[in-house]
Image (cartoon, rainbow, N blue to C red; front, side, top):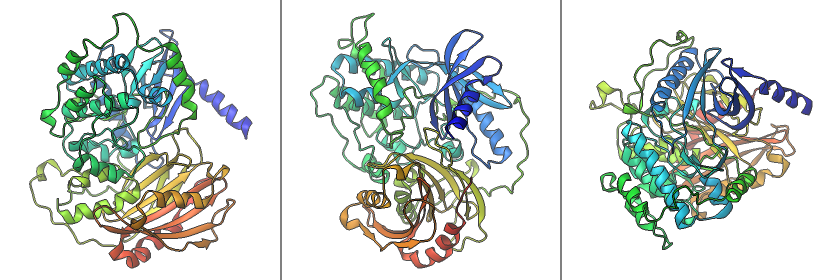
Length: 569
């Protein structure tokens, strides 16, 4: 098998995109695609190339939409030319697919640097603050909101240059529908309160995220727990007290001026830079030594693949999805002709009324699913999907929830990991109209995992397929169950007795497991899970329903969905 893998890598390394970009080695994998270190044979320079990844089974019409959106957003990002912004060089075409060609920045991310050496000194923190603020000034003047400022997206080159990355190209193809609302999955520890509550994403949201990033820079840790329950974190961001730096760093006042809940009350970028004047290093010098940066690079392989704060590689690449003024003008005719969808079109959902009852109901299930976009929307009482523009002000009658989901539809999912672990493709029968999104996780004391979520249109029911590649190399099923229980207070988690099941091919037998949870709002839910060992991987198929509907939920959903799960060879 090792020979096969080596041969595949060798073949991949020989690929040449658009006749000039030779793919040399993989920098990082993610659900959004693969980032390559490449060589531009025309200009004789090293570049970074992002290969957009389309999930298995995506209808051709949706795939064409993703390609078109990539081109449109590249036009928007292409207007940015600033020394503190990772430059987009080109959009190459190969077999009709777009490849994003970017500046290659040898060095480390701020996230890795903080993990390897702890808090930065005042001069280093000031250099980071000034560089990121300057990058955001350029973006905002061009009408672009970054939307995901955090240490993982701040790059520090080996020569001391500081650049902001992750401006806009298709973050996660499976999130194509969800990200159109302007919410980015995966960074609740740095997300602005108005965004966490489902509000509009504006330039002011970047100011909060800059403050949270500077908080981590001087404190050595994020202002909110990046490894905690996502729902709890979002609610704390929205409703809790704003964290204040404990250190007496001169940067503490800037952090407090940026992390203000009222968006209009936040310190301006110009004021941030003005306050940096007396703290910056001497012109022409770098506050970072080569040993610090290269040390952080050596530190990278020992880090988890991903936590709630995504950090897939030492050079994060542009990947957010700008909205409104962030989008460039229509790039003109596509280099391909969009194909009609070969599948039945999915009915358009008009949005859910903003009632407390349904906000609470959705929270019940998203905490079990691991949080993300819809949890953020419902934490603020907002609908899961935006209403159509012509119907924003029109009342929508919420149909009564029907747990009888009708005919199930086979769906293809991909639980590949950030590091590209193979064997993640699966099929499962899902009720029609349920939305899909993907979450990369790094649980404490467990291997990195990938969760594929399916959500009912009204937000009441959730199906989750989670995969832990290589789980049984060092872990046991009991450790997985302990980790699930550890995410809840003792009085908020009640486990049923597991039942051994004759499925799975791993070193332990499969299990059926039921447990009940109560969140901070006293909302109760029930989760049914099949824990499935397959060789060295662990798969978990779970359905979460309101506890008041647990009996019918098991029969109408779990007992019908779970047996259909199959891993594609």
